[in-house]
Length: 112
Length: 116
Image (cartoon, rainbow over all chains, first blue to last red; front, side, top):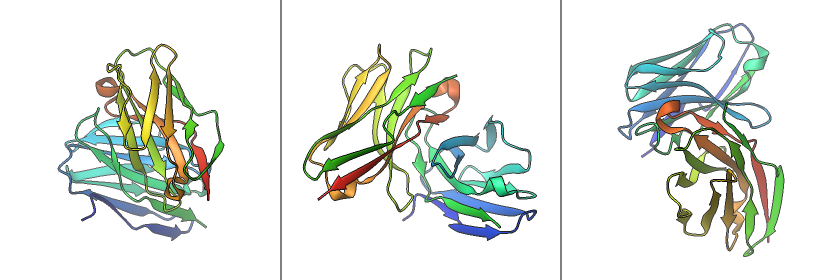
């Protein structure tokens, strides 16, 4: 039974398109996150939600919009995709800000 | 701002031997949390070990242990009896706890190769 699941696992699309990545966790955690891993494998936080409320918004272009319909789901919508958006996007969740974060398997986004 | 530095881009070890991966961090906080995550070629991010800064005792998880030196801001990972399945990229991560709302700041990663 997958704890943090992301869909799709791979996403190949054209520049300028809009796409969404979905994330669901069945761990009962209150906090969910989005991280971006670039081509050099560097991981950086993008957003964090606690109980459906946005609490971290790093310096991310406003083309990226997270949405949390309930505390088990955190989706990421990206408008007007650019070449630089190519990366692996990870969703994670934790029971509180000091507890270990459990990661999904990542979504590899490739922009053509 | 907090930074995490892993100065070893690559390390290698023979199967059954011991290897230590280095990590240093910069913070002005006194209470925080440190983690090591493993990322095998499958891309999953797997928690290896967690250390609370207020605990003097070094964390251990089976073959994995840390050497936490708070004054030196150093947090190294020791892998004993290395196995082929330990081959992966290892990331050190810092969490300032409540003040950072759970934000993890990662190091650049160290690629570990295990030779049979």
